[in-house]
Image (cartoon, rainbow, N blue to C red; front, side):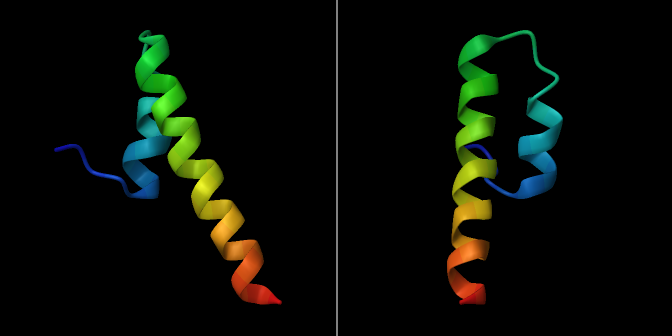
Length: 40
């Protein structure tokens, strides 16, 4: 199973594979969404 932390996700954005980039974007987007929700 792959790591789902932010550092790994940002590193995967540089990948040539579309599937990998989309997966990385999802991890980052979810993390940012969760961070925004916890601030309220």
